Length: 206
Image (cartoon, rainbow, N blue to C red):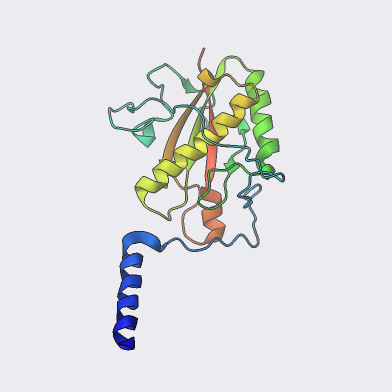
């Protein structure tokens, strides 16, 4: 009787694990962080109020080449989009705008990124001819579909913050590349933390 009860419990546990209750994502190792701003802070701020959140509606539902997604073909970001926006800094330096980093599996903006976000907001308010395309990126862990969605949430978190700081919403578009455009290739936390990011790309809109 006891052995059949034990076997039944063991089989139930296996069914639960196979149904997706387990996680294949390894725990994050934030020790020895060497990337400015790549800090884990799930609350978003000291008082528990997140700086970020969702915001905006992205950049349409169809890319430049007719594929689903905000921009479609990642190679087309440097070109003019359907609204005539074009990169303000064709050199690829993005007018030296800072990259915004995120904690593992999170779309919440961390307090260490506030200064950089505020610099972006102040610069944008001083340049009425500019808009921003905010690119959301992830490390390679997780499925492609999951990382696309996470990248979009990260881009929208930045967009929401900038709008709250006074940047006009119509001057911001978002795009997610998921894991497709890593800043650094390889594996391990020292690489992954550099790929969990939001990248502001200034665009000439006037």
